[in-house]
Image: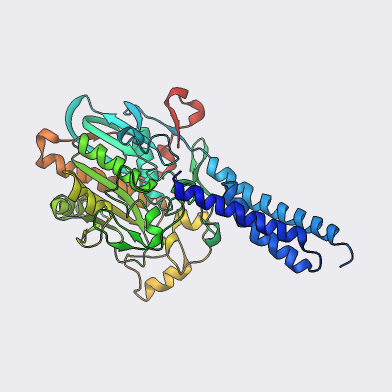
Length: 51
Length: 387
């Protein structure tokens, strides 16, 4: 795994963290909660090296 | 919202269930191992990474089956699954590994050249994850792969792929396409290391001929053919004429373009002494205007939309109600490859390669593909390899 690939995994993990934090903080809109979860999904699959 | 915590829990559980339901089949596909029974002709199995240390041990490293004859002679390399969504070449090479015996010379067979692509999928296009070939002892299951290596092995893609060494600008995704990364670099991106290792095999072992097995859409002009550069064109033409006359199927010769870089049929010839050939068999499954991408379409090649287009003369191959079944495509690959070696051997007696026990076009059309696969449950465990 080269350096750039490692950096991309770190960026992905950071974005997952930001989205998860926004999900936790969201209090009003169920639509936004669902949106955060759906956006997070492919990133989690990449971090888990599934897809 | 009255109870946001409860809503979050419900949503999180629902999305997690979605992730598991969608992710688990992909996880299993990536880890599925295809058993291959090495036949009496296989004298050893090495890794492609043995020829290039920077590939060794990576997810892109793959098996090289070596079939050595009793008599010394020439050497040939067969490559399949360069594009892992074109499985006729894979089946042809596995049939050779399980059945062929080399009498003279040496045959190297790499059945899963792009190992990463063979573990990649295209579920967004409705591709099946597996396909089964019926045999006398049950169904033999194969992984259906993708054209390009998985981003899990090589990521990120550049905006534009700059080919080495010509610096031609190619599509970004072709950096994961092992038929655009020839001749490769020892320390390049992973797919360049795959092709570099194959180049090292060809150069260091003085391989005379390399045959790369592919499939192409019926609507693509370069299909049902042998692609050959200038140095291979005579042998390719003789092989094409012979299979047409003796075995009754067409596989015309297409010249390898000089200005389109990165392809096996161009770079192998330019960067090694080896004569390269690329075989294209029609694969209706890959055509865009078809019905659902089912296993049935993959195996029998029958599609009503292609039939309609054939009547309007929009296809580049003959096409009727019989479709273009897998046994025909595998048979064409086997006969054409064996004929190329025969024609090469006729003109290079001291470097000849003689193979026995390999079925040809008529055998495959009569018996089907499954007849030539052996039951791993009854085979000597030492002869079983997993791809």
